[in-house]
Length: 293
Image (tube, rainbow, N blue to C red; front, side, top):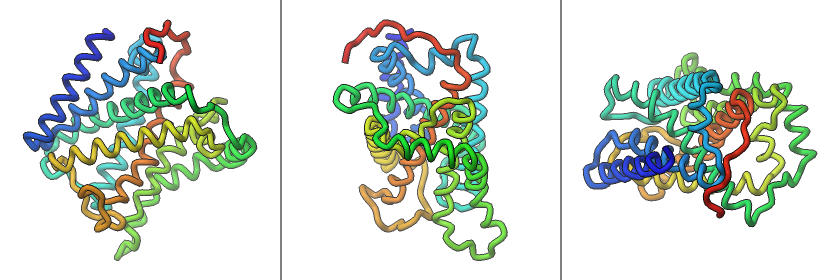
C-alpha cells in the first residue's frame, strides 16, 4: 500500500497541476487535494511510522471514520456553501453544478482536511530537530484551557458558527465582508473543546501557550498550502472571490485577506483531526521508522 499510495498521490497531484496550469481546468482541486493527501500521508508514514489514513481504515476505528466525515462535511458545507456562497456571497464556484458540489463536500473537503493535517505533521517532524517542543507560557495555556475553553469554548464556538446569520435580520448587512472570520474560528474552538472535555490536550492551547514547534509547523503549513492553492487557482479559476475585506489589496492577483484567512482555516483542520485522533482512534505503537530525517 505504501509505495503504490505514494506513486498514485504523485500522479494525481501532477495531473491536477497540469490540468490547472496548462488546460485551465476549473475542476482540478478535488484531484489536487486527494493526490496531495495520499502523498503527504505516505511521507508521514515513512517519517513517523504513523498515518491518519491507516488509522481511519482499521476496523476498530470505523466510528472515528464516520465521525470525521460527518464533522468535516457538515462544517465545510455550512461554512463554504451556506455562508460563503449563498449568504455572504464572498466567493463563488462559477463552473459548478449540483454534482460538483456533492464531489466537493464528500471528496475535496475531507481530503483537504486530512492533507493539511498530514503536511503539518510532516513539518512538525522535520522542525523538531531544531525547535523545542515545549510550551513557553504554560500558565497562560493552562488558564486558557481550564478557565476559558472548558467553560465557554463550546458556547463561544457555536455562537461564532451562527454569527453570520445576523445578515438575515439586518437590511444593509454592515461589515458583511468580515462575517466569515467567526465561523472559521469556531471550527477551531468546537473540536478543541471536545478534545479538552475528553481530558486531552487541545491544539489551541499549544498556540496560546506559544509552543514554538507547533506555531512554526502551522505557519509553514499555511504558507505552503495557501500559496500553492491560490496560485494554481489563478490559472484554473475554479473559485472566484467576490466580496473579501480589502479586496483591492492583492498579491499575485489574490486578495491578501484570503491568505490571512488560511490561518484559522488550517488551524481548524488540525484541531478537527487532532480531536478525532485523541478521542476516537484506538492508540497504537508507531511502526519502526523507515526513513530517519
